[in-house]
Length: 374
Ligand code: MG
Image (cartoon, rainbow, N blue to C red):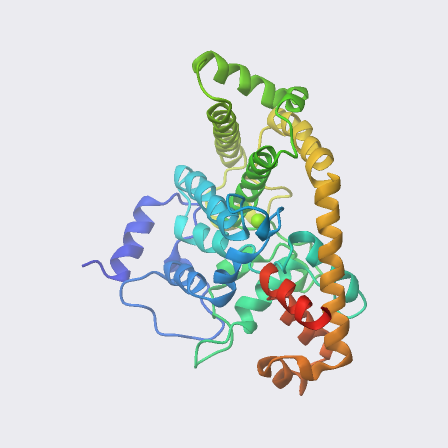
C-alpha cells in the first residue's frame, strides 16, 4: 500500500521539473489534515466529482438543448473530453495530470442553463450589480456555494486548482501588477477545452444536419484530412469517414501543440513552475502555422453552426426563459426554495437569484418556466 508521502516522492521523481508537484502545493484556505493515501490534487479531483454542480453538468446544454437528441454532447461529456485531451497532453509533457484533471473537471461548473445564451442573459441582468461570468461562477461554486462539508463552505480546494479556474486573474490578484500567466497545467486545460469543443461541435453539427460535409470542403484543414482518410479507407461508410476525419484533426492538432509547447519550454528555459507564469505569453500553444490553419475552421463553425437560424432561435428562447424566471423571482422572492431565502437575509436578492438560476439545469429551468407561466 502506497502512502501519500510515497506517491508524492514518485511524483517528484517522474514529473518534469516545471510541473507543479502536489507536495509543493500552497495548500487550502482552511487547513485540513492531509489524506493518508491521496495527494492533495487527487483529493480535489474527487471532491469535484462528488459535488452537486458536477452532477448537474449532465443536464446542461453545450450547443444543442438537452431534449433534442440523446447522442449530442452535454456539458458533462464535453468536460470528460476536455479532461481526456488535457490528460494526454499533460502526461506527454511530464506535467501533473492529477492537477490537470481536477481543473478540467471543474472548468465548466459555472455555466448556467442553456449554454452561453443563458449566461448572456444573466450577465445582462447583473451588468450593474457585480456581473455574471461563468469562470468566476465556477470559483464561487467551489469556494462557497457547494455546502456539503461541516467544517467549511465550498470544497476548500487547493490554491493551484482554484488558480487554474480563474481565467480572470484580476479578481484574485490585487489588480496592480500585470496578471501573471496561468500555470502550465491550467494552460493545458484551456487549449484542450478549445480543441474539444471545436471538434465535438463539428461532429454534432454534422450529425444534426445543420452542417453539411460538402460545405466543409472550403476549410483547408478538413479537406486535407478528408483526402488522407479517403486514401486510407476507400470503402469506409460516410459516418466512419466523418469520425476518422475528426479523430485525425484532433490528433494532428494535439501533436502540433506538443511539439510547439516543447519548443517553447526549451527556448524560454522553463525549469520551474514559476518560470512559465512570468512570461508575457502562454507556453502551451499551437505553432503559428497551425493557428493559421485553425482559423478557417473556427470561422466556419461561427458562421454555419453558432449563427445557424435554428441555433439562434434556440438561444433566443433560452434568454427569454432565464430573463422571465429572474423577473418573477425578483418580484416575489418567497417563491425561492429555503436555501435561497435563507441567504436573502444577508445578501442582495439579485445575487441570490443569479446563483440560484445559474445552478439550474436546462431541464429544471424549462420545468420551472412551465410551472410559473403555463
Ligand atoms: Mg469548456
